[in-house]
Image (cartoon, rainbow, N blue to C red; front, top):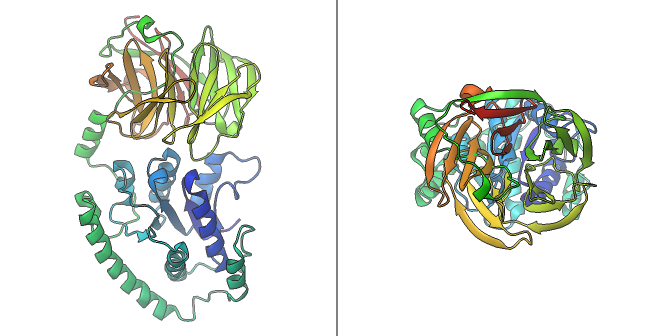
Length: 456
């Protein structure tokens, strides 16, 4: 479906996203929004990439949820890489994370914190109409979405198609004034909220942004270890010198598209492939044994991590954790978590849940939170436990280990000898240390890697 606007949002903000979509479409602005517009049979990542590339404007609903969502961050990065004009629509008083801020620097946003929401949606509509008219985007009439409110349907009936050849000058003048006023407001709020210096750039940009070398070095130095799940208790896990050279033992194709979780159980592997709605059971050479249907579809804003506690599988579903019966894939239990989980690990006693910026919450099997803490992380991809150590992998291929007190011990680039992609080319959401080898699921190259220190 041809569309004008791609709406990017966290699943926690679905009500706002649906209201925005209905409001814009009632004004003849065509929207692409997931999951409504994901074509049947097409994987989520492919649909997202195609939809962003075919949009005229990218609208980000900026909130605490989207600020910490790896999926939303990838969507923002995709839009920036393709040079799509972006409009952040901030609905909560949140300061962009370092990763999100990297993409949004120099871009003015629309504040929609104070109610009513309808007022801010009208401002967004005016801005989009002017931008689309300036681009010369032709938009035939589009029906309002089924979820539109009665008031929006009434407004839709009174709406006439927007003609870019009529009334364009007043709108563009209004837009120019609005941008100037918005810049002043943005500067004031930026000072108040102590945004980083780059946030006060007066020049909006939609070009592809690159990290300065010194910034990249700092990010890599701060990146912690990746998480997975271990079946034996931590005290039984052998130590490893992280300074050793690591070699690739083997690699093989993943059983589905974009694997996001992996654990070893005896002489077999479990691999989560949420966009295919399956958890695959493989032997250690990647040969198919069986598959489970996921208890719930998992391909969405929250990635699906995977852990094994000795008897059951566990997976993260956005803001929840589900215990999974390994015999039939059915949910045994579920409990809410206080962050959007990206990775999951079992330390022999507790479940560790991590988001992409290194916030960690520790739960018992009943869902009672035991601890909440953080490690310095930039684009965390996965975590796993070694002997009394937490390991973290980031999307640049940097592996970092932390001691029991979560003090950084050491770090190095796993990509150097293991063959795993680096520098934002891979998304290794699955990570598991089995005592002798590290198993990594690469969601971009769709491969499973087994890596080991060269002295083993």
